[in-house]
Image (cartoon, rainbow over all chains, first blue to last red; front, side, top):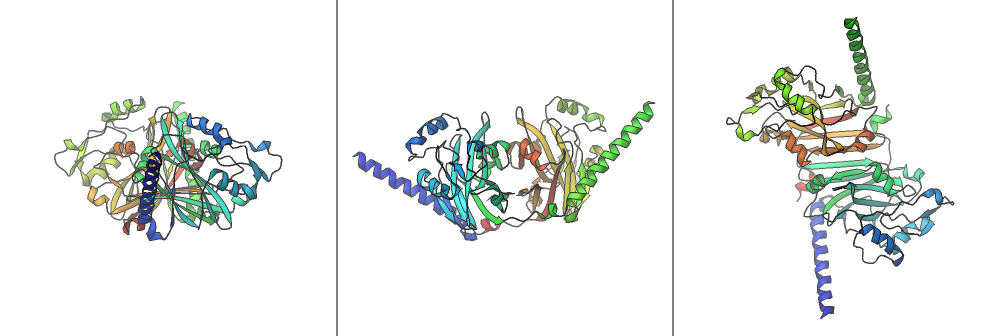
Length: 242
Length: 242
């Protein structure tokens, strides 16, 4: 009986996911963009055992401490950069992607322009939506975080990080775009390297920041669609002439 | 002696204003855009006597109440829409511009694209930076407001309102753009009519919203430059195909 109940739940989940995906495709298919439905990592079911302690602290409203890179002696050896879990794994830059995929089950998408559809925006902070994005010969990590920087006032922070060095990151520009109901919001910046800490990028506010009210204006039935584009960087025209 | 001190103060103010203007021109001259230096209205020296009570309440940290348009029986007769002062003036839409210029000394600029340079961003909330913008045969009011929506956490809100009816406003799209230090933030939306209340637009968060940290990232020596462009509206491509 329990088996059949679980099967029925799984089928319902699949129908819901298919519906979300269909809805996103309907909105963005005009641009021929790949739509990826991203579920929050707050309730990640398959977190490895060694991340359990960090997950518990996150569920209690405490974000895991940031890895300080001063402790890494080999500059090519980086701690795990999955921002939600205080994962003790360390490895070379080349194997960070496979670690994120295998240990943390983060999806990877191909293409210069994709649409990131974050579901269940109503979930309480702290919650993360994470995906990897492969284009222009590099891998990027997109992090959307709901966090209460000021108690009782959750905000959404979105940033893109290169799985590479800061020097490599300087060669790119990423764009995040929200577009709904005759409103459009665009953020363009140079991605940070994963050798820098995502927590400090967010605490500095050097990313796309949305109040809850603005996030609601752009979301559709609890899901927020963010168009992502990555290009090789060029200095903004007005600055180039300074 | 007092006269000479005042003269010296005025000369210093002029030099400071000229320096701000020069700095803005240096940044934006590449685009051939008109730069307008906008000082905050918090310490407006020439406020008419009948606005004094409202000014006192503003200085005490209380924003004047919003004019409710239900009370206006003639739909063409609008209360004064200068958002900072609870001004009792009422008049037809056609004379709102001359009222704003003459009574509240708000500047008006011509051109489809201008740069709004708000000075003294460090001033405590509530503070407004206001300008009128004339283009495409209509006048628009740009309001940048520093306000503490949540106590102790001031934010900046920028919106554009048409000095016209909501039906007329639907024909336009305005764009506000911040561009500094390899970061770019753009907000595009349909302007609201001044028959709607600027306070409610801001409390709904349906405008460009900046945290203090983001405002600091985009400002240069205490001044924030906002590029403004107005076009006749077209439905955003992705929505048109829905």
